[in-house]
Length: 158
Image 1 (cartoon, rainbow, N blue to C red):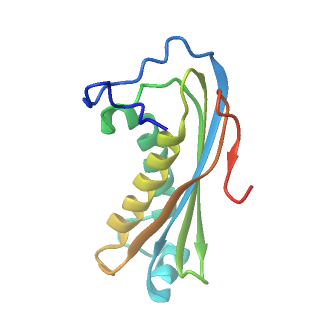
Image 2 (cartoon, rainbow, N blue to C red):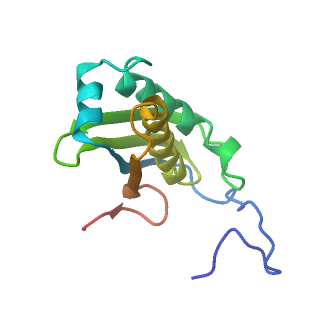
Image 3 (cartoon, rainbow, N blue to C red):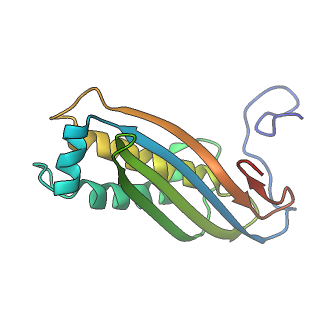
């Protein structure tokens, strides 16, 4: 399958979506921030110097989704109709699991916005906790569900 962000001469370009149908679209992405149990306990107790880590990261993820076309050069600016970012402390990781759901009605997919929401939320968790632990690890960022448009439903494991 050819890469759509390159023209016939191999130059990067923004894909023309003007002939595509306007459809409802959704994407869900996930990721995590691994940390020590001691750092996670600070998050759960709400006793970090910078405040509510999960609340601030949730807002940052939402803002990141809304700014995706400013950050990723060939992304179309999309009329986002919903962004939900969920962060959950997970003692088994140990760390914070992040999921973002983004919706639109448009002519192109919204996966990049969901991935950006998770990435920005994860970076915000790191930023807010780096004073107590610089060895945190961010990972597992991937699309787990995408629906809408010509390519239809994609779901991890389906």
